[in-house]
Image 1 (cartoon, rainbow, N blue to C red):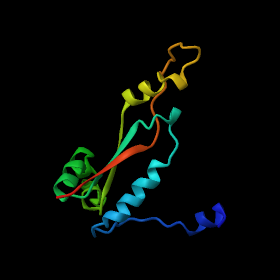
Image 2 (cartoon, rainbow, N blue to C red):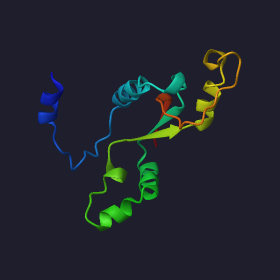
Image 3 (cartoon, one colour):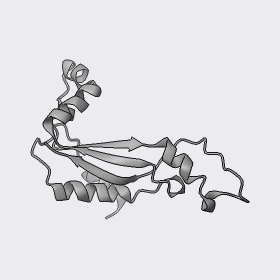
Image 4 (cartoon, rainbow, N blue to C red):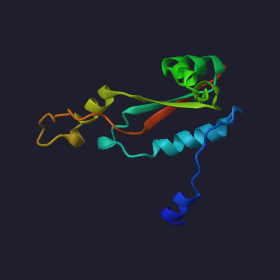
Length: 127
């Protein structure tokens, strides 16, 4: 399929299912995310998958879902089937660029750029 054809089939989703997402589907999504490239193959991210309703409500509170609901948006953060939360470790990124295969002539390399990458592991939190 051509990319342009794919864009023509795209639809806006305004309501999400609250049905639980099967664990194997969550794991497939997480494995696909793990394949994303990362700077220096640092793999400086981890993926947290939340399916427990109480934890999902806490995440929604932290994301200020209430202020969006107050202006008419649906409460999809707290009521979705699963939440995928990327967590970044700047330390892992810096450590990776100090490894021998990343050093030039045994000199320490600067690692001032921000970390980017893919999840190296994922965790599913359930009730």
